[in-house]
Image (tube, rainbow, N blue to C red; front, side, top):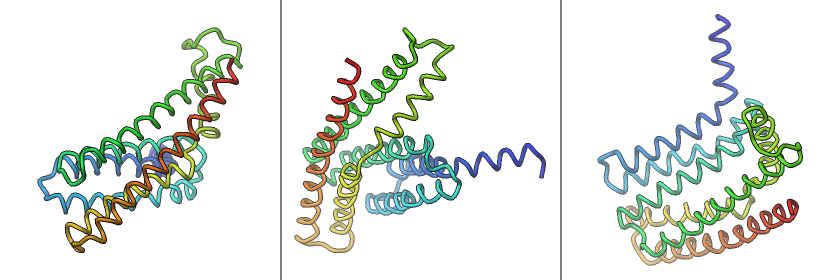
Length: 220
């Protein structure tokens, strides 16, 4: 095998988990917004694609790349997946508007906290390295150290993951109620799952906020 092809193959294997994550995000967007399928079919294929999320971590470990940038890419892609789903549910009116607004607001707060946390990490590394500002000569060093700190300090906690799972369960129950199991039980379970997800998200926001506050105090 030519050296160039070996290098490309090695890069593909090394980044296989990240490629899977990004591919899933693109396919979910295409499925929800650019196909002419009915809502039930779109939801079905959304869940089929979401199943691949369970393989990202295993694939990264198999490739020996489970401690790199993928730990940032995977949760970022998950966020986009859920935002796409919320927009689809809003457009298709499969979920009450106020519920979507509550979920969306919570995710927006988490995203804002994450952006603040990343900016604090970059600032901390700039100060620790003794630089007055970020320039083209030191940006690689600063961002490299900040990435290492982000991977260590700002990883999504289990409560945040639980919130995403509960939101997905809510949509799964909506699908069941539409397609397979019409009645009060899936509807009540869906509402309960949604509110449990909101509660988990509130707890995770408090945890993220406390981490950001602690990081800010360290810089003062």
